[in-house]
Image 1 (cartoon, helix red, strand yellow):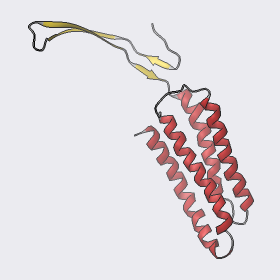
Image 2 (spheres, rainbow, N blue to C red):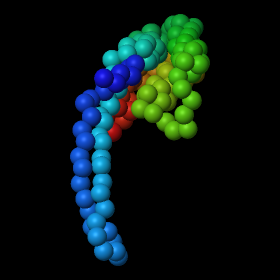
Image 3 (tube, rainbow, N blue to C red):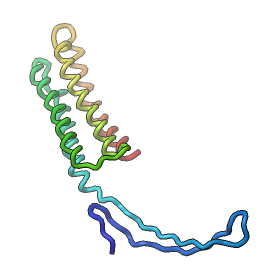
Image 4 (cartoon, rainbow, N blue to C red):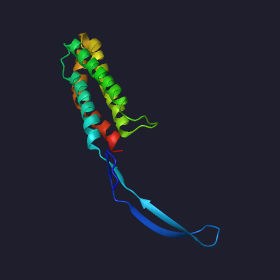
Length: 162
């Protein structure tokens, strides 16, 4: 029985067959072996997905901090971004180096964009929260409370379902 850590290995299936030779008389023999490998996803969901989702949710908090608390918004946005960068660096040393983007990489990129947008919103609070733009700031907060979770779900769908 074959076993590979982190993978579920199915039973091999073997099929013997023959096929006609193209442009030649006779036939050829063929022996196919099919081995189904299925990656166990739960480890990656807990190791990558849950902490990354928590970091993104932390950035989502800037939409609930009042306009008068600009330093707290900046602090939360900056902390979220630095936490995401540290997490990406820590995981980068444990994951294999490959020349293509995986679903997890796409999820990371989408999450980084969301965290960055939270930081941009916090920085915009400096300009918008004061004076005549206070209503715009309140509108951004109200919209952000609905749009941000939808963007998180869209990020998940684009990374893992399509």
